[in-house]
Image (cartoon, rainbow, N blue to C red; front, top):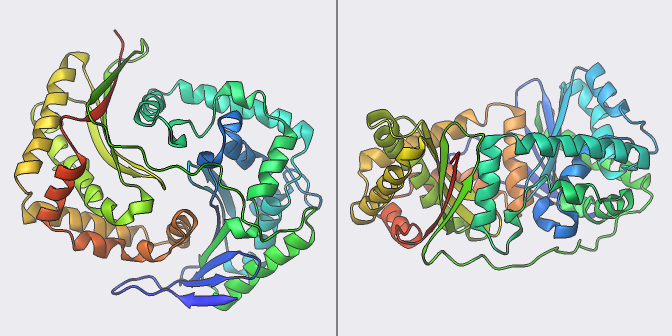
Length: 432
């Protein structure tokens, strides 16, 4: 067992990281707020699936709560509600996360229940069939959502090989064919201590938090039908990042349900595997599209009224990132807006932003970091995410310092290297 106090200069955070002999990683921090959040992060999402089981990770998230040999279906949620606690879960491309937030005095009795449902889900056949209908309805609702349809079309266009091109929910045709045994096999492969990061923050001593979580896993493992093996689960794919675009690629989709068109412009950029290259791109996203004084928002929406909305994100997945610009606009403005966006990018390539403009971004990032550290759930999510997807907690604590250290020249170099106005993917959805 190894324990490390993770420190960062001028950080408001001081988590302790403990690795147990069974492979489990625990991150714990005492925080003087009368609550405790336990977030269990699995380093498994839709990216580890094959095409034949696309959607399995999300479907399994639903089935985790359908009972174990010692807990009936619904009993976990009932006990959580009776204690006035809350629970929820989420699945993404690179992770699945489950959490509870409890009063400190209830944590020792509720944490073992959360670990039990996660480790020892039985995945009954009848419950599987009922929940299949729920997941299929969720897929249908997502297809009725214009924002999600735009995102799905964009991801399919952005990636040719990497699994980020597939929807987390999976296609209905695949979900309809999945079997309970396939899910049990997926669960036994991935839902093990060595695939889990337990991030726990709240108003109990650090050693007590760690002990409660460690004992919860020991108890659940003792009840497991398939005892844990220290063998690392197999990688479903090992793939290099896809090459940057070399030309302008364009896809146009007719979507009669849209009142306004959607324009997405994307560049392939570094992901978490090349983290040092992502900070300048994060800052550029804020310069261009975050806040009313951001360049795109001020020019295209506030001053010229060419778009109803426009946003910019640097989407950072483990193996690849996307610099993603999305606008909602009248169809007749599509050409003008795309041209204007490229004009801004060309300007950034030849003229570095001002120190004052960069300072706005630094202030935004610093404030968001502070505001995002106010509750136990905020901190547990921050720690769990970085440890689960990157295997390193340090970037969670040093992110503001990385942004503060950026210079206008570094941002200019990032635009020149990654955001070519002559090579990108455009996706357009319009009614006609």
